[in-house]
Length: 272
Image (cartoon, rainbow, N blue to C red; front, top):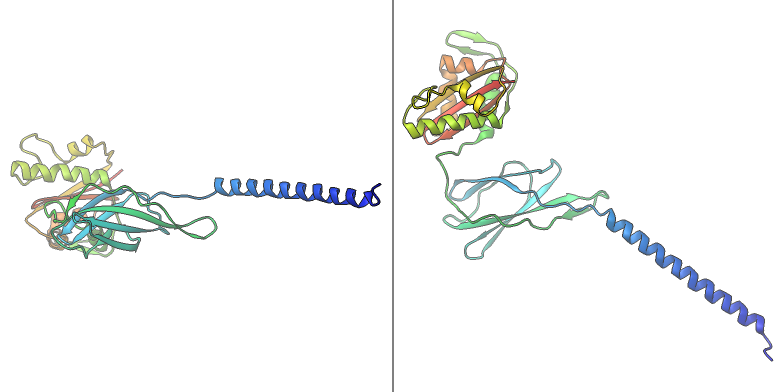
């Protein structure tokens, strides 16, 4: 006869209770883990929108969808497999100026960011770009940031254009459609070896170009130039020319786009 049946019963009850508690804790942990994984914030690396070598060792890269508080790491790999890391970059366009000259490079981008708990995170590296030869494209390159700054610096103060004083005007913003219109005309001037606002081959004028790229203008003006190698040089020529200066100081203008093709510059102002 079992002398202490109540002790066995008590131990059995505690064992069942312990197993039940552990099972519940395990289920809760699985639920929490699943919830955590579902709410994990993962981001992907931004893609490269545009990339140009401004000299044989300096590349300028523009990225899509890079937020103000985010940074990127960029790896450049040459044709020999050598890698060059550039870390913690943020200001657009990103400029890398220490690449060995004369090589062919591919580029990959990794995003650095903070998750919703403030923890530093890194994305996977994006796909490598097509191989690019490190050589400058001086036919089309100019510093768009410098150009826009030059325009707005000039508009921020009173200017005398051909003996007439023009009051300071509001700043303008860059517009890609107006850059497209400028590109059409600069390429045409180089291709057909003419210099003027009207294309002698097609008869197309500035307003025709604006309509062709579907810019719904209320006002526009256009400056052209040839033979100036830099933003500083061409802008100096424009601001010192009475008619070009007047276009630059037009208070009704709100947007601008500029393009350089070889020695031909086109600057189109607009308002919608």
